[in-house]
Amino acid sequence: MKKKHSYTYRTTESVYANIIDSMSAYNPNILEEQKKYLKNVLEFLHEKSAELFEMRAVIVIVLLDIEPDMPTVLACLLHELEEEIVEDVILSELLCDDALNLMKELKKISTIHYQSPENSAIIKRYLLSKIEDIRVLYIRVAKRIGMLKLMRDDENLYTEKKRQRALSSVWFIIIPLLSHLGLYKLKTIAEDLYFELTNKKEYDFIKNSTRENNKKTDLNSQFNEKIQHIKHDISNILKKENIIDIEIFARKKGIYSIYKKIKEKDYHSVTDVHDIFALRIITYSVEECYKVLSVLHTEYDHEEEHFSDYIATPKLNGYESIHTIVSHENNFVEVQIRTQEMDYNAEVGSASHWAYKGIQNISTNKKNSKLENTENIENTEKTKQSDIYENKQFNALKNSLPQKIYALTPTGEIKELSIGATPIDFAYSIHSDIGDHCSGAIVNGKIVSLTYKIQEGDMIGILTDKNKFPKKEWLDFVASESARQKIKSYLFSIGENVLARIDKTQNKKQDTNVEKALNKDLKNNIKNVVTKKTKAYSGLIIGGQKNMIHHFAKCCNSEKKRNIVAYASNTRDFVIHHKNCGNLKKLDDERILRVEESKESIKLKEL
Image (cartoon, rainbow, N blue to C red; front, side, top):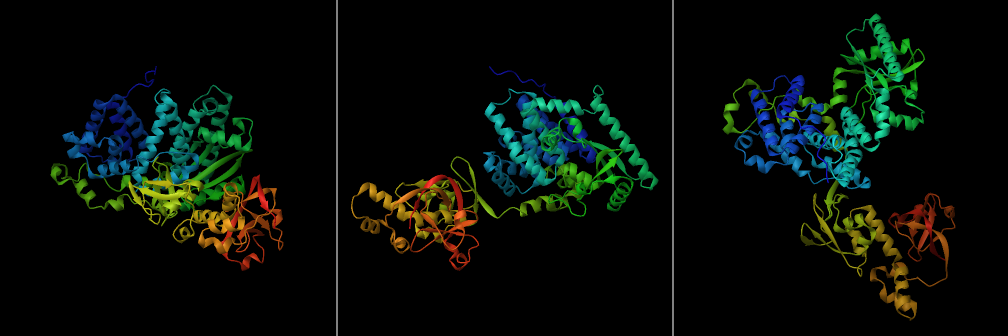
């Protein structure tokens, strides 16, 4: 029997106070109408279900770490409840269009879930391709991290299958996304939660060993005394150089980050990790960043190989900072130097700057004119939405994605395809056998031809027939190189396959039967197929296919099986060449296939 939840439910008053207090710290101009509407939303959720209210409260508290605006908070609280909102007069009439649009986008991506580690990169790219507003991604991330928090507080909340799926989703999709977007604060939270839920013993040991306010252990005392001493010395040195308009504070590595470093460096204990606590120096200009760096490198020895200037060369996600490691009294300490804006971007994410660029009205509907008579609202309406929420890093990330389209199998698995892909491409992306025996396709419930150009979001079912095989004509319309290689592999090997099939079913002259069975378009390619003795050989995979008849060319060192390719000869089978062979360069590129080594033995035809 399932246990009751171990956590204590929050009240609407406490959640409301938490949200308003947090938001007021970065947006002191929250409208009274917005506050009143938020209170109505929280009461609506609490009346609907105490468990639902608790879950949404946990998610929105995670979201507050990236300083959202009010429409984002409302969409986070109310998503997936569109039908219930319609029935509530107050909620439906006063909910702003901005929040409604976010809820619609969230619904579009609600069916995108983690499937497997191998497919996680495709899921991540598909997710990014479907999202137009980065705030939708923020809510999705907060929801996944919130699930881990709930799992930590109550181990009986979800089934084991759902727990594992949530953990895998965060590890393989959410954490890489946070890294790409430069949301390092949330990334640390997500990593530590995952680590706590998957390796509790190690997590607790490192946490207790590095807890800053735990004076009971010698280890903590050593860390605290050391970092305070270094901070004091650096502050005095900078003051002597008249660099006073700065902030210096200590930053502690995340629990998982410490564990990762111990494993990577093969350290024996936590004390071997020198940069558990690092110093962060915040300046008010880029010029001051370099002044601070100059003073530190003049005063202290530093490790040149660990110096990184991400101000001169920012990371792809927009991250900017100077990183250096200096030696202070035989202790190495990491120092990060950055401006206030750079620090904000690194902790919260540069996309959150929209929080300062305008105050969103509760409603943009004309019928709610009583809410549209303040100066703040009028000023906000003059600002274009696209300007408020424009984010260069997010757009750059989306633009860096490969130009692909995404389609689904009937079971919901996402497949990434080249633009112009056909059902044949889709079939081969599932499995070579599916592609080889593809006889038709059903797209969104309708039968289509094999030349159909797949559209974004199509759901595709592949029809197969064991008596159907690839045709030469398929090469005229398939879009992916992978499918082309597999089709060509089959076409060039069909002589061997047909011969084997005839040998088992008929006892006639082989030459005559082969000619009758072959596809007319392939006669010229394999007309010299003959039966000869075979021997076992440690074989090769040619064009993704095993058991392909081949021999080694005598013009190059191809028998060493290093850096080799296969050439489909017109009069024989596959000829193996070294990829730099001079003779190979004179041949048709279309007939050259990649070669991989196989551990299994295959039949090598003797010529």
